[in-house]
Length: 301
Image (cartoon, rainbow, N blue to C red; front, side):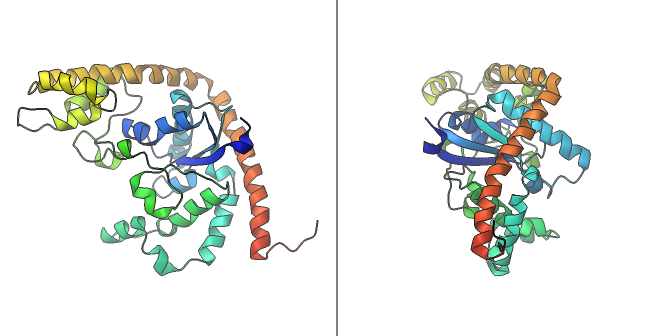
């Protein structure tokens, strides 16, 4: 199938630290599946991440880390254009154009701004106009599909939300999030997996521990899992041990691939650079069209 007949899919992830299984089941796994039949742009959103990562070394390490993560889970750079946002200046250029035609009251209705305002934070301009850069990310590639989590649905109209895994529970029952400290790292070593699983909050009803089950259900279907949990009702330690073993079986192959990739960083970074050049070529072509529409293109070829 030629690329011209495939729908264009754009997805991005911020380089803001270690990924967890919530990131994997909520978005990363779908990217591996979508690469088979979409023209896919996978963006490392480093400019978006600057709202939270403002240390140069951490940013650089995180960018390379995200690249390693995606390659380790099975993203094929021959099928997918993997690039970082900062390599394509057209993103921020188009965001400025959007800034000039969007009112402040309109942006003040955005969830990210309202949440920050409610917490009495000093709100940076990047948080305020985050939806503008996000809109530019999408338009610059004429994306047909933008898979997002439920929390981003308000910011875009073209969305694909995988309902069954839109919210992955953490060890405390809340949404799995680094900010809550309730995650199970995606490439964790066995002992770390065990420590995280043993910290999962359980109730005292003596039945099926819902938080343990909810995470386990990501790895096994309910038809297989439910009878197992019913046969071990109240035996929380045994059920957690089973989850530890299943998580180790799931994580270990990806963890080993990532370690292997870490030994070839220059080769890995070359993939990112080539992806950036390819993405910029597409974005530059689109920007010529946009400049004509807003009237700033005055030179004849």
